[in-house]
Structures are given as C-alpha cells and as structure tokens.
Image (cartoon, rainbow, N blue to C red; front, side, top):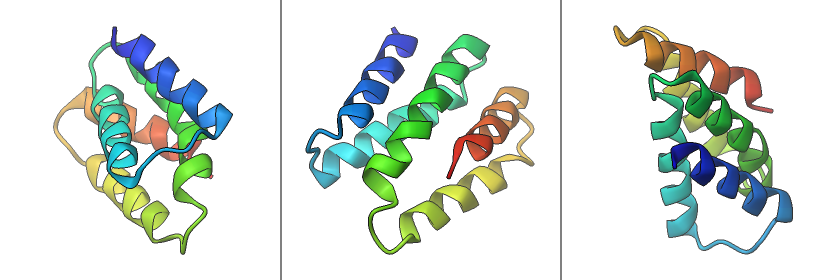
Length: 96
C-alpha cells in the first residue's frame, strides 16, 4: 500500500495538479515516512516520488522549503536507525 501511495504522489507531481499547501505538507510527510521504512522497495518508491514532488511543488518559491528538506535529510544521516539513514541518503540523491 505504501508503495502505491508513493506512486500516486509521483503521478500527481508529474501532472502538476493543483494541490493546496496543507495537502502538500501532508504528502511530503507521507514521502518522508515512507523513505524511513525498512523495506527498500517502499523507500525506493518514496524517493522516486520525491524526485518529482520537490520540483513540482516546493522549488517554485524562495528555495527555503528545499533548504529545510535538505537539512532534515542531512540530520537523519546520523540516526541510529539504518533504514532511516539509507532513506535519507537516497532522498538527498534525488533532490534537485
């Protein structure tokens, strides 16, 4: 189910559908949660969606959102949870 949700977010991002700000935050939280999942397929699906979500919805402003996301992923690289470190490293690689 998590991989399907990530794929759905990827499709929304590719289509550049209008999404309210609150929904954007919810979708980003979902992708962040999925990127920390111990299953690598779920992590990969989340990172693939993040690759399209960030340019479609977060970069079009002042860039502050992208800086916040990058900082968050960089902080997670030192976490004790291996899945969280792996997901953060994958996410950093997918950011523009």
